[in-house]
Image 1 (cartoon, rainbow, N blue to C red):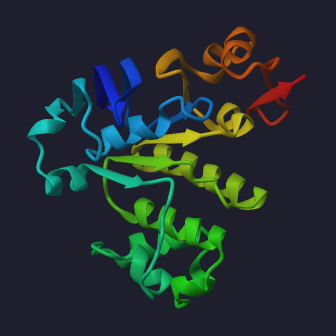
Image 2: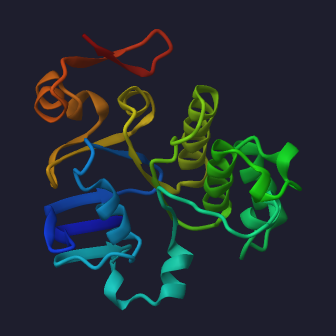
Length: 242
């Protein structure tokens, strides 16, 4: 598991995260929610080894991240940041396949992200949503134990948002990857997450299954909305805002 103990972090001298404790388990889809500037991206960047925290520990299957080389960490963890600028004229398949040996893994990831019809297209010709799906496919094609996705639904239309989360559910159950997604979309979090972590002003307010974390009281405090999670007819949790 990924274990975070008493993590605090700053950005440009401003305290962003305060005493964060959490665990990301293989075989689970964990969704990190919270308003803008609550610290979601800073937390993911810290887990990815990009941002150095002020204090605390990050452990990957018992190994401290500070003792892992960049190569070793890349074998354990794949990360898709919020912004994915592409300035090179790679084709979709070339980018998804960078550093990946297995052709089956590449094609499977492109199929999940509905990219097979675009595999020979240059990235420079793609829409924002198509580039986003390509960046996600690159992460999903990697045979790592853990994946971090920062706002992966940005630029995606509703069909591809739903398709992405259906694919993530298949991946965590089929390959036992641990996936952490930072997300603004509360209904998607309620419907697809095994575990929801609710972040507010750099602190974890709640973590657990959607019914436990996304309570009326918690959502009222964090988002200033009245909402509740209930079971839908398809068995998935649904969020109603009223």
